[in-house]
Length: 628
Image (tube, rainbow, N blue to C red; front, side):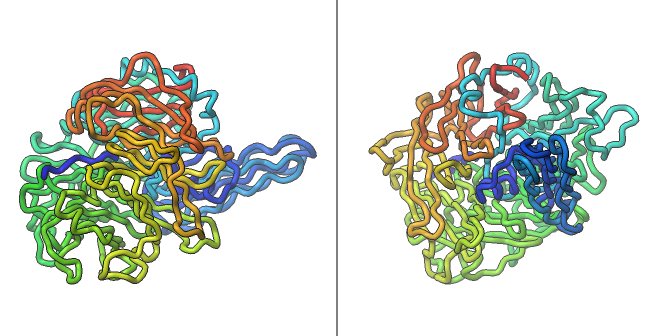
């Protein structure tokens, strides 16, 4: 059967930890690529009865190898508390302390999982290495969401050449003004005013565009590669400290990985890295450049860049699932892991989840007959560390009992992306992996011991929820994980034949939310379904949802709601919708000019109260009242 394409920073590693632990936060999260959590400053003391102001955002770690970030200092007693100082860069920054005296100062939002990037940044798909796809935004209340309208001027200007499968990214600072050091964050505040960020769009025509956040106009454009091939499909990743955007390109007959300055699009020294069978091997397998295809989002963990590969649509050719690892501090160091069996591709656009040390990849269907010997990695989740190192044991491999049925009917596990979810302190396990699969199963795994000791036998999951018809190709998604008033949710989209919804809802095109219940059996249950009413042109997904939280338990789930002509061509148009994160009740579907030609694997982001998504040839942006 033909291969179907999957969908898949400010949704932040530390922001997720904040909401999971129920800590109130109104600070803006910092973000960036490549390191651990940045610290957050404490709100300073206020005088009796006065509220302390939120602590500032923590600076993020450089790559996990510096000293830990310090907490912001406490303000002196007196009038209203002043902002806590930003945490210093480090491997693991502390959460901002609560403001003292009077009404407590609110906790400053924590820095991102991936390093420095300014107060606002979306440096990778899903926003953090967990791939949690949740954004802390106090301004996006239900009342504000009900007023969302297109940003007309921005949308008119934010145009470029080429179709888009990669998701849009964002970095706070744009190119430095004259006399401003390239590495100086915040240097543009005087030169460009309050709006000094850039959106980054990457096209299948091998173009990378940086667009001004306020006007939508192109600031710079880089055309990479020699043309031909598949262009850019996987979402790039940005390293905030070095201000570098890493992007994978499928050119004619080969693959290359580029490192571009976010300031002007110039290539960094030592790049691009060319991938070929002559230089990249694993267990006797050579990287087959002609048959490999790069779909999935790139990851950056501890200065290692991970580039996943599947094959071409239709399952043809001699390809394997590959994860290529490149040391960004020395790009001559390249290694890789390949699936043991043929095919077994890593297809999902959402990318690889990370626990901060290793990465988790889900593979697709292959052609092997048994998992009881190491001749296949079909339909499984694997955990790799470092330069794609792999240990084949229960802690690092999981596959479901239905894997052979999935394998024989093109029901790829690897058509959806896993999400890493840390649980509250004292929980057992301490973290889980939410792993959706194409035939409507959502597997909840112990992230510290994937198959709970059953491997090489199948099973060992903490829960296996069936949310759609198992005979259909129902799920191409990446979950958004958020904390609301009712608890910790994992929410996905389902393309066909949703089932087991509370209230008996069924049908195509649903948003489905599952409540995660640490310490209970099963660890998750389906709690609400919301229809995506606009999609009448395709059985494929509208794209995975994202979520926003106000930092106090309120949550909204956002998704594209429209008519899609197919999973490849992006025909039709879409509006932006939001539902209540606790109940799935409708909050808003925008009016005005719809977003045209959005591909259903393109993934929206939230920046400063705006929702922005990449479509073929342009960006679409919405904000409360349509104002910037």
